Each structure stands twice: as C-alpha cells, then as structure tokens.
Length: 447
Image 1 (cartoon, rainbow, N blue to C red):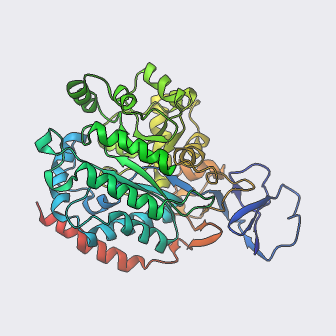
Image 2 (image 1 turned 120 degrees about the vertical axis):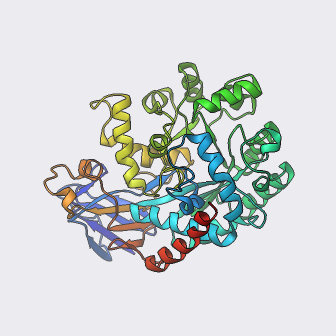
Image 3 (image 1 turned 90 degrees about the vertical axis):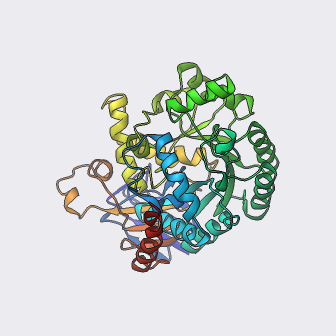
C-alpha cells in the first residue's frame, strides 16, 4: 500500500513540503512544493495540522526505574549516594512481574512522546530475573516499538569493593553465557530490524576487566554494539584513579573499547585529549541532559565531541534520575543546558533534533533510521500545535522544542500507526497506570 502523508504543517526533511510517500514500511518518495506523488497512491493522510519529524530514538534508559520515581530515599542526592540508597530497594523488589510492568510503562511513555526506537540498559539481575531480556523483547514486540535490548551486567558487588549489593550481581561465566544466548536468539542485523541486541557491562566500578574484554570478543563475533556508562561523575574518575591507576577513558582503551561499535552514556568529564581520542575512534556518546541536571553530574561537551568525530545521541536515562520517560521533553532540556554550556547562537533546535534522530541512530548503528529520506524506515512522529502552550508560535519546528511539546498526536513505526489521537493502539493506559501504580507501592513500603 502506498500512503501519501500530505501537506504537513511543517516537516523536518528536505524537499518534502508536500509530504512523503510511505510504502511497505519505508519512505519511497519526498514530495516537493508544488508537486504530487510521481505515481498513484492507495491512501492519503491529511497532515496539514501536524508537524512531522523523524521518530525520536532513545539511546539510554533503565526501564525498571519507573517504579522508584521521586523516591523519598533517593531525592536530592548525587549519583553514588543515589545508587547506594536505591540498590537495596531494587534488590528486594524487582521481580519478573514488576520488571515487566516497569518495561511496559517506560516503552509506552516513550512511544507516546514520539519515540519509535529505544535502547534500555538493564544491568540488575536478582534471583528470578534471569529472563529479563526475554521480557523486554516480549513487551517491545507487543507495543510495536523498535528496541535495542542491551544485556547489561554487574559482577563486582560490595564485597569486591563495588557499589551494588551481592544479591543483584552475577558471575562472569553466567553473564557471558546469557549474553551469547540473547544474541543468538534475538539479534537481527537485517535492514528494518525491530529487535537488536547490544552488550552493556554497567560501569567500570561494577564489572571486571575480563568481562569488558570478553564482551568485545562476543560483539565482534555477533556484529553487535557495545554500551556502558562512562565519564558521568568526578567520583567515577576518582574510583578509576584509585583502583586502576588511570582515568576512565584510559581504562576503556585497555579493555579494547575504543572503537566504532561503542556508545557511552553521559560522557561528561572528558578532557581535551580524551575528546580527541574518542572522536578519532568514532565512539558514540549518549547525552542525558535531564538526568545530568537532576543528579548535578555536570554538562556534556556535545559540540566538542561532535567536532572530534563522535556521534552524539540523546537519552532520557533512568526514570528514577529523570522521573519520566518523555524523550520529547529531553530535547528541550538538551537545548537549554547546552545553551548554558555554550551560547544561544551556537546551539539551535536543529542540533537537538539531530542528536535525538540521526545522532542516536548512529550510536545504535542504525543506518536505516533517524531521518525522513527516501530509503529510510517509515518511523515518524506527528505533533499538533493546538494546545495553549503553542498559541502564538511562529516557527512550528522550533515551537515543538521551545514551547515544550510532550505528546505526539500520531506515531508511525515501520509504516504502521502505533499511536492515534495521542493514545497507543495496543495498550490500555488506564489499566497500565493502575497495575504499575500498585506494583510501585512495594518499593515505597520498603522504606
């Protein structure tokens, strides 16, 4: 079926003033001003009251953390104290049932905000949650959103000098065996893939060097991406200097992680030489502005990283250090924090769109996503400007970010509608809110 998405109010694409044609899940034509599709279409969608952008791509999250938003034990803390407050609560209460609801809620929030592809960094494996990756694949498939399932890991607990409790870590052999299982079962390297897998040791202070190196070997064997937290706080620098006698980027290089398969979460505390080395290796960086501000972690050097050669993507990060899973809101936060870091003229709304689409796609290794162009997958987000917040807005594309868009009116993934009139087509929102809220009460009762 050929669908003409006709006459958008505005569109983030070149030579597409009259819209685009979607066929078999892909964009097959951009229709310039004054023209019509080159051949007949089967269906026309009137987009004249909507701003159309590429589907947003979230490159860092922790879905289970939706269950501990604004948790009284963790608010008003920086990263390490925040983790120390929440680890015991997560260890006691993250079960397959609560994990499934946390995943479902996060994916639904993301989709409603205009996100069409998401990556979740799941590293917490208490007893009974061994099939966490399978649960996430099931939930993403049910909702119809693309997902990079990152098989995270921790194998250094408090008894080893790490931060997490003993009950949420696994041994190296168990981790590596499950990484291979998940890759063999779910990793799809074909164009238009709905599910891909990445390997994601949590952070230098929670995994061993052997696990980091063996993850590289598996990634090369299965042609997948690698992900970890790095450069998020000064505490991390101090930890690496104390335990490894080097800075985090040096440690990353020792482990064989300075290569184009890798994308890092946060990437705040890099010096000029480290920025240069990361760029030379084409290592991606996921900018997480909301979490960075919430935990007072610092400001990512986005412009320098991009100039050096790093793909820069965008992520909401965990819903306990962001307190929502709204990727569209993160574009506004990214614009504001980067204007404080640089200035108003050198960081525009187009920069934040690029980070959340093309940059994020590059971080995930997805050449088929991230832009409205012929040959790309038909992953699109549609926004109306009829709320009070948009009244008086002159530039529709700028208005989505500057005026604070939150919810997409429609979302398309692979040519199929997944959100219509602001509501996901495959999820009962009211039921989800009730079930998730009931499950989250357990995490409060643990105080």
